Image (tube, rainbow, N blue to C red):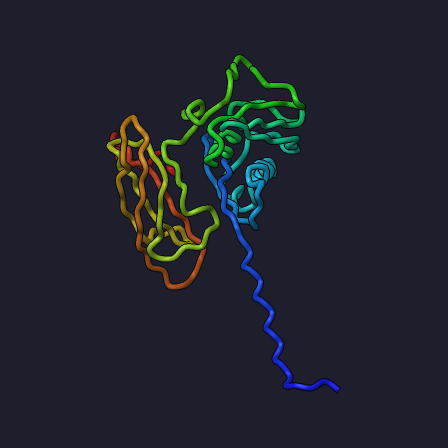
Length: 240
């Protein structure tokens, strides 16, 4: 029979918490670029995952908020390589070439520090032009700056749960840099109204960030409306 005092089993080590990652997807809203976000379990191939999610298109909630995509449904990613700051994206021949679809991919990939520009291939063949648009070398965000909206809301994301004060941020190119904000309740009633200023305006794009306090009796769906007030008649314009 065994001798000696019994020993207490060592406790099993706690499993390491699962890592997650949040990345941007660039879709379009009312003909302009618009950013959405995804949070998923971590993968080292985050660029590939971001492109695959972009090709999947907006979620049902994002489509209900009028987000869309100019990338042809069914387009598949055949490969992605990154070398010296340039990403080479190889897509299948279902890819419908349009300036908006190029911009969506460029903005999605250049969120990562390793990527400064994007080269496109279709079925392994370099894409050099389409419809009179010359693709000369790696495409960068500056090539598609005119597709940004007057006002871009980067936070909070569509469908995100918020509480008062709501942290609202983005970029804008508006008259005298004044960005107006309203928060609406489920019935569309205004529960908060304010404004902030971007770091640049009237012909240049600046960033804005502010916290907006509001009060509602119960948790409910709501709407954050960001807009510019017309200098001509005071009406809301460039509403997001």
